[in-house]
Amino acid sequence: MKDNDSKAILLELANRIKTLRNERNLTQAVCYEDTGINFGRIERGVRDISFTTLVKICKYFNVSMNELLKDTF
Image (cartoon, rainbow, N blue to C red):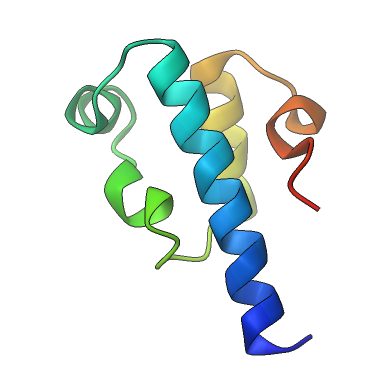
């Protein structure tokens, strides 16, 4: 996979996570306090997300992995 493809995928996922956060009227700071996850880095697409971080995000937002990843590929 080309680096550009990887970056595009990360940005799509970043936008999805940001949308979920905004739908719940949460700030990045509140999310960080609650989870210890740096949402700023994720939402800018500068950090590849581990599977365990994805699971934590799903649990935090109470969504399935399918729901989190929908429309990101």
